[in-house]
Amino acid sequence: MRQIFKNIYGKIFKEEITPIVKIFFQNLKHAIFGYGIAAFFIFIFQILAGRALGPINYGRYALVDSMGAFLFIFMTLGVSTAAIKYNSEKENELRQQKIISSSYFITLIIIFISTFLFIFFANFLSNFFSVSLIILNYSVIFAICYSLYTLAIDSLCGLHQIKKMATFRALYGFLILSFSALFLFRYNVSFENVILVICFSYLTTFLLITINIRNYISLKIDKIWIKNLLEYGLYMIGGYLSVVFLPILSKIMVNKFLTLYDVGIYNAYYFASLNVAILFNTIFIAVFFPTASKYPQKSLVLKKIKKITPFLFIIGIPALFVIQILVLKFFGQKYPTDYLLMLLFAVSGVMFFIYSLYMWLFYSKGVIQARLVIFLTAIVFIINILLNFYLIPQFLLKGAVMSLIFTYFFGWIYLLVFQKKLID
Image (cartoon, rainbow, N blue to C red):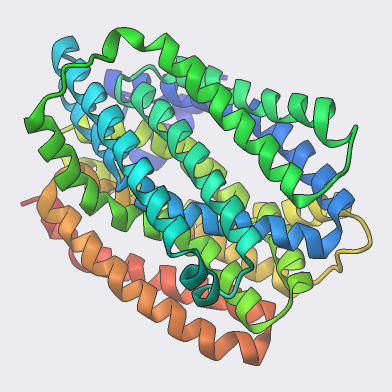
């Protein structure tokens, strides 16, 4: 098996596997194992929830998930991801302790302040996003729990403890299914209970990881690192908006123009396609970003990404199409089959993955490159919203997916135009 892998690698990249590449793939193997186990548990959970709730209540759950992901951005301000970059650059325990302690301190303060503001402006936010107050309130709870979970997971990632990070990710998946068995399906199945099960799983994982890395957490907060983390973290918001929120912005736009039933149908297709692409992207970036941050020769990394890009199209689109056919059968007859919608979702998943690779490589370089991503984020969001306003009324669910495809294609071209910034 190893020899086959070496042969494939040699044919694609025209070189032998170096020690750095070997370590990268070893860490990737650990990440795939842990995230794969979690994905299996989450898959069962999503199918059971989708079938039990039906399209309308599943649509409500999807809205909470989408809104929570948006609010999460303002509860973290990219601080935990900035901590990954700085922790990855130098493996110095005292430095890493200062960074992790500072990131915990900042994130907890931001969560407290932002939660107060979201509650204070609840009516305004509810009207602006066209969602009910109950969905907004559960979104805030979801965002708090997800922010804490991300803070803990990113701390392990920055410490290059990929194997341990993968183990806790697998545990998170196990907890979701366990809590479901104990509470969700023994009592009333509602979208509120589904959200609470996920939140309990996030909080439990956060506490266990925090206990595990307690030696890196100190009450002595370094003001310099607070400044560095906040400065770079603000630039990381562009990455979160592009990778975390932009794919699910379409759900909010579908809710604005169509119905909760349509949101439920859209989320089922999204779960079977884009969510799969996001899963593989999360696994890869968890290893790629800290490695690229540590590796000074970005131009060599860029060349490797360019070489695998055609294979992502050739393999990714058919794979995501087939996965949708298989997964959607589990949702039941309430969720209709639309092969053209499947194809569009498959293309959007591949475009998302490619765009994300280039974006995170830019982030691994430094502040100047991060500024380019921030500017790009503003552009792609305007483009995506305008496309949604035009295409969803015209093509319904397909219009929302087409908007994503065009948006990520533009973002990819933009990053290719400025690729020299990675070499300078």
